[in-house]
Image (cartoon, rainbow, N blue to C red):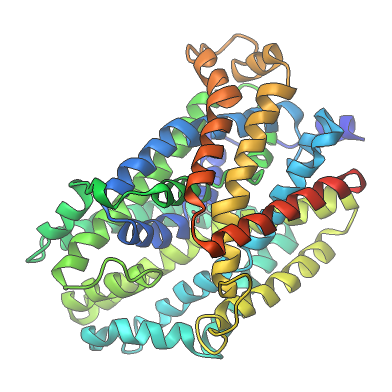
Length: 473
Ligand code: PHE
């Protein structure tokens, strides 16, 4: 069966198509919504330096490892592990579970972004001082954000149920460069505001006194989240990759694009934030409060137009990511469980929709209701980003380093010797020894708050249970 699948595996139409799909999955809310607010909450420059270290020393190697395992096996995440070693099926299952949980809050934020496309033209920009309060009132409302979330999720369902991800990728090809150009424009506006230099200092003058074990874990988790790693997404994408493609250079391209967008988002937001006298530590509202203010200060129709384009581009960037998340879950149900594509999509997203409702309400009416000490939104967020993705990445590194044949890996990475990859030994040592130890240390020293400890224990329990049941998967 797997042999047959392997032969029939489709390939990406072109190198550009693959890069855009993988970068489309990577570049999303993680870069533009999450990265700036985490930077703000974790002290600015020091966080960025640590984040870049995580990208360079962990993210890049894991990206290459995921591409390699995917292309070598020609299978999506669960199948990829299972085909090599049945005892490792659980690691693939954990990835599917991560995708599921991320989809328990991602569409909520996608819905916010979609809502802001419309809010941009219905008076949001008219009163710049009120933009912060409007955001807090909006996300805490009982009905409105749910409506936007459902619309956003419905678009995902439509795309994945029809198997027409090609359409969204085509939109991404236009809108991702648009986002890029728009970010450059916003950066220029932002840094030219009076008082912007405080923001640049915040970004470029690291204050090491604020760094703790938690900063490292936040940076590592963000690296995994932003690069779509640690859950098999890039294994799945790699499985469609042509045997002639140069894996190391593809990994480098995707990682560089993702990192560039995150840094640009930081540069766009912080100078303006300081110029407007806002708090960098305010959390998830950052992009929704600062960017509209920049446009509001431009005034008139032009500010409005730019705001609409920005949020359309952000929504599409989010869609190319969430579609890949939903696809991981759906592909598992199709490939391993024999469920029809439509059924798989509807069933998976019905559950995701319930999780998203809980997440959204936890910002308002249900804010007093907690699971293991945190609201639903934070529960899904912390569980995936601080626990599951890092452990997923660690498992992949251990798997590739200790349970796959080194020579076979080398043959795959170098296309049987056709591609020269001088760093092979260094990369291999990274995934085999350094990364597993590094992740363990960071996780251990970063999980300090009591809620995080209980979440960690909960997460580990889930992993053990899935390991026990994985023989049935
Ligand atoms: N990388 C995406 C983002 O930054 C989120 C994502 C995580 C997508 C994991 C797929 C897998 O928005």
